Image 1: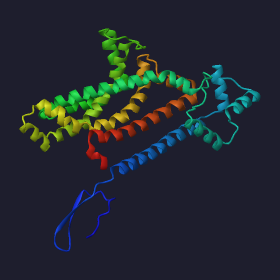
Image 2 (image 1 turned 120 degrees about the horizontal axis):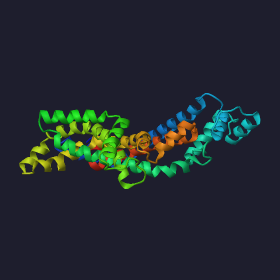
Image 3 (image 1 turned 90 degrees about the horizontal axis):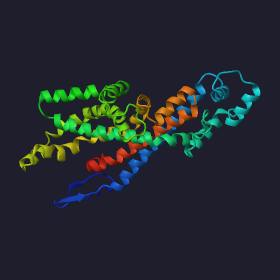
Image 4 (image 1 turned 90 degrees about the vertical axis):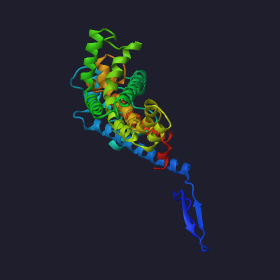
Length: 345
């Protein structure tokens, strides 16, 4: 009898022996090894993405016009003026600008691995300390926005998906419209209506507990519309599956079917988008924190760009790239928790 290799992902196969009897050979896939290999492969791809983002950020500094030493001195002085060779030489020696570019690049990568983003040109402080002071506020805003987006998306899709052509068309239209709303426009509208008009929320967000509501909604509403577009398709497809008919035959109500069975199968695309959304909301915080005068790395980034404080800009860009990569790795692991069938796909 021919033997089946245990490495092949075969669940069961029938073979006929010499005597004519059918022999069933069952092979169980090595799930642990398969999952570990997949995660290692994704981790390797993540490292390549981070290296690419860091490399682009480094060489973008070199591509800027003008002398870097002069720029640093002008930032510190707050005005543009001619510098003496002695002043420029001191700055070049301090920041290693006289060394070959390849050595500067290797030192830069070595610092990133060690968690050192350099020193701010303007504040004379480590970039990690500057970002660390404001990161908590931005992460809180991002997580609140994602949570609100999930609530809005689940409620809206559950209410409108598979309810007939008119309600379905209305739901799809609202999804498209909200997904395309610009954050700066939506933030100003929410501020005018609920801040200045109704006075339900503070105009300046600050650190007040209710100050996070309008900024979070500004990020959450377009994100909810974007996620709803992909979830709606899966939701309506799942309503036609045999397990829905079986649940109805057992006497389960419509809401029970939608929430307990259909929704679990339909939200997988939204889980994928949540990993992207974490990085997107961190990026969107640049606009939202400026509109609502809220502290965070978005405000720090705007200030750094205006003052040409390149180490701070590079540090924040690299941080957002790290968040994107780590969030997507976590999403890949969560897949199998929601639907174990995806483990071997």
